Amino acid sequence: MDDQQGRHAPHPAVRLPLLANAGCRQASPAPARGRTLSGSPYAATEGDGVAEDDRRAPAAEVFDALGVAYEEAFAGSEPHRASLRWLLERLPPGGRVLDVGSGTGRPTAQTLTEAGHRVLGVDVSRVMTELAARQVPAADFRLADIRELPLEEASFDAVCAYFPLLQMSRAEQAAVVAKLARAVRPGGPAALATVPLDGEDVEGHFMGQPVRVTSFAAGAFRELVAGAGLTVLAEDHAVFTPAHPDAVPEPQLFLHARREGP
Image (cartoon, rainbow, N blue to C red; front, side, top):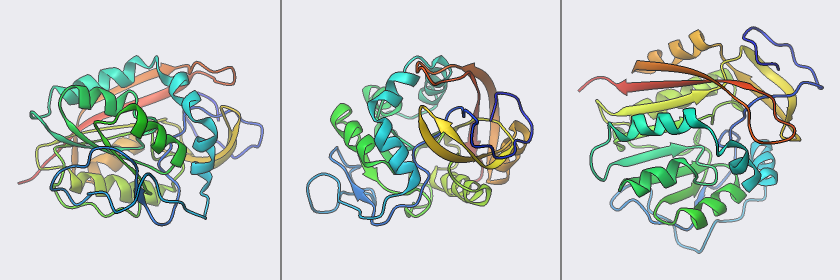
C-alpha cells in the first residue's frame, strides 16, 4: 500500500502506513492495573494485573512485538495532539472518555488524565496495556477486543479512536463506529482517525511486522461515520512519517464529530 488514494491489490512486498492496535479478536477481556471509572460498568474484575489468554490474535502479536517502539515512532504526531486539543475543548470537567486502541497510554490517555478527565483505555495488546497501566496510572486500561466488549448507551462524555480499525473487516469497522456512537452521550464529541486508503485485506509490513489491513477512502469513511449517527464537524488531513527506519510517509484522516439526538 502506498500513500496515494485508490484501490490497492494485496501484495506481499508492500510497505504499509499506520496500523492500529485494538482490532483483532481476543477471548476473555481482562483489566490491567489502573484507576477504575467509579460507578461505571467497567470496574476491574478480581485479580492482579492482566489475565492470561492462550489464544493469540494477529494484532496482539504485532503490537506486543512493537511495544514502546510504537510510541517512540509516533510521539511527534502534531495532528494527533491537535485532535486531542479539539477534544479537550469540548469535554466537561472530569469527563469520562473511552479511548479505543489506547496503546501505551501516550499521548491520548496521558493528555486527558492530566487535564482532569477519567479515561478507560481498551487495547488488544497485552504488552501495550501493561505499558499504559505503568505509564498512565491515573487511567484505567482494559485488555479487550472492542468488537466484543459491551458498552452501555450514553455512558461516556466523549469517545476517541485513533487508528484502531485497520485490522478489522469493513463490516466490523462499521459496527464498531456505530457502537462508539451509541456509547457517547447525546451532544458529546467523538474523535476518529484512520489511514484513508481504499483497500481490503491488504498484506504488507508495518515497522518490520507482517500485517493484513483494510481501510476506506476518505469519503467512504466519512459516510460510515455519518451513517453511525455522528455529525462530522471537522475533517483534517495530514501526512506523517513515523520516526522508524522502516517507516514511509502516510496519509492520515482525523474526523471530529458529535453525537446528535436527545
